[in-house]
Length: 138
Image (cartoon, rainbow, N blue to C red):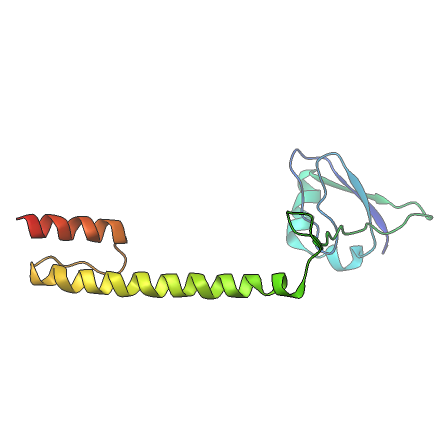
């Protein structure tokens, strides 16, 4: 039984491997049932009645996975190669920001140690600044 109809009888969406998200009350034609039949999670859903398996229509098409392509930016301008590199630039900027914040944390931690206050990098930068101001005012 390779081709079956799966119906979500539960109240929550179900993620079926190799198929689109199956919303509550929806049915899909599943063409990879042989692969899914041994899946313990799928078997549990069937056993509990959240998912029903029935014979698919002979003329049915496989469930289509919806893939949305983003070819235009939020300003409705066509996407360009320069905009494709923006995530890398943004990641580099965030990495740089994290690095400079860590450097600042290290400087404050070192200064706090001169006042006998021991902290580490897990402390937020705001808290470290606050502790340094308190230590300086005493």
